[in-house]
Amino acid sequence: MKIREATASDIDGIAFVHATSWKTTYKGLISDEFLDNFTVEARRKRWIQNFENPNKDEVMYVAEDESGMIIGFANGGARREPDLYDAELYALYLLKEHQGKGLGKQLIRSVAQNLLKKNYSSFMTWVLVGNPAIHFYHSVGGESISSIEVKIGDELLEEIKIGWQDIRGIGIDE
Image (cartoon, rainbow, N blue to C red; front, side, top):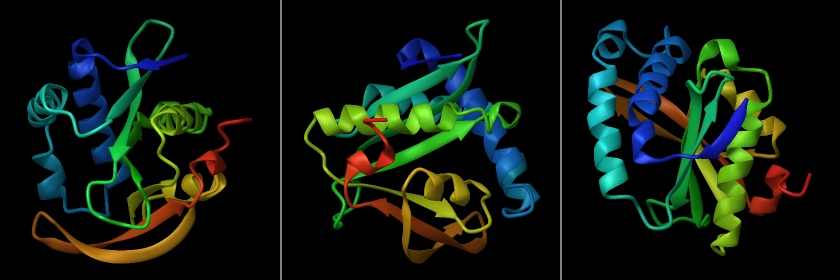
């Protein structure tokens, strides 16, 4: 397994992981109708735009298996909305069969370390209530801070803000 910075040539793999992970992670949390329309092609278009117009200081890493296939990714950058935290983890997804192997920790640490070098000091992310990854974020030092209601498709759902007052609390120095 290998973690490396993503390039535009990774868009197809990232889009596949993104769409597939949503369908496995959010099954039963988000409507089947919404998930059925969460396609690789739609994600591909989003990631093309993302690579063409990245947010300030945005970074992205991919996880590859032994064959070079992208099996996960994480990206983050400057906080998208004013907050006590200055950096944000925008996304972290792994194909289900590769979860629980330490790749998520490597991905989140890679993003955090890169942002620390860019002088960001704190970090946060949003996690949908019911997502089993909430335990993962707590295991790497995140604390549940607050929650908000979000609209996904036609449903109102709850997301939890998980934060690290000190970005180094993600275990960068371990």
